[in-house]
Length: 157
Image (cartoon, rainbow, N blue to C red):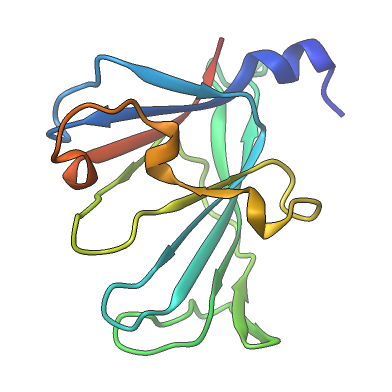
């Protein structure tokens, strides 16, 4: 269990970039150590969900890291193949395979498909109603907002 003071300073930073190679002028800080990223596959209309955990810096790592805890896919189809370690449970392919920690996720967004959803907090205790479109966490910048890339990274405040 993390001390409350540490949990309040480590969280998720969301930054908008009109072009992926440019850093954003503003970031939104979300004080959470766990979140779910969800979206609907544009071709198959299949729901994807990924649970992430943020670990604070320690003696080996100077910065917080992002860990994929579990991925879930509701069904399969063109470009929606579950991983080799995934197991079918109640209509969802669930994969808990270990992967290397990440320093960031860069999400491409489009005005032609529904936005990603971000669900903050412990996924076992949250209700689906706590999931909000990614745009709700970002500054309103311009009419092409939905076409901008978004960088999610673990950070300290």
